[in-house]
Length: 256
Image (cartoon, rainbow, N blue to C red; front, side):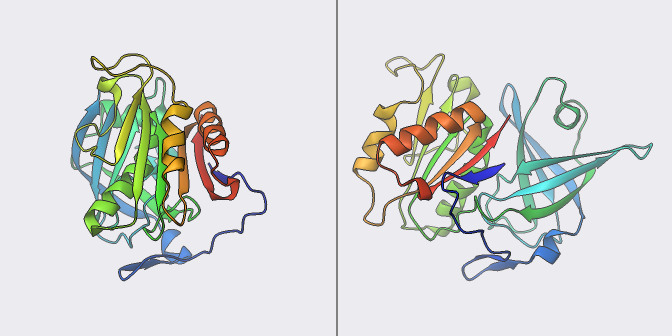
């Protein structure tokens, strides 16, 4: 679910583009395509990344999501929305990072049964509101699997060698549950709520983490992207507003 804190914000256009590379129409995004699972990577004890080959994928913007469809042998189907973790530069492939949700019909199948070579169906990309094409300074704030669409933005920033400022705050219970820990660099500040390496404070994301980024923001200010649970999204957005972030420049994607 995506939203803005400003009810007067304009509705995003129906055509999205990464400058100089792709344009994706609603017509292309409405077609189901076959995706073949090629790789599974364990990220944490509860989350894994699933890489798919999708030869006809028309591209996406960092921050967008897709619809995934599984079909059982008896014809039963299950559909879910998932954020895309890979950057648009990963042509012909997409990656999804999924938590193993207890009792989850689709996530359970992926984590317990899926193997390379399996085929599913995907449709997208969907929603341009939470997308970041790399054209403005981005302040990314996520918790748990909320880091997934934000990582697509980080990867796009690196792949393009963009000079536009980008910073990320990501909250996890501990280092062992920090998704993409091996990839995170100087642009990222992790916040640990349950346990942390020696010398690193433990606690909820607070004004002490957010305020310095607003105090030293770029000349054009930040476009803030917040992704996480309902409770986290509310908490993080309040921290941003209290630190001086304009409400109409906060984009939210929440779940749960």
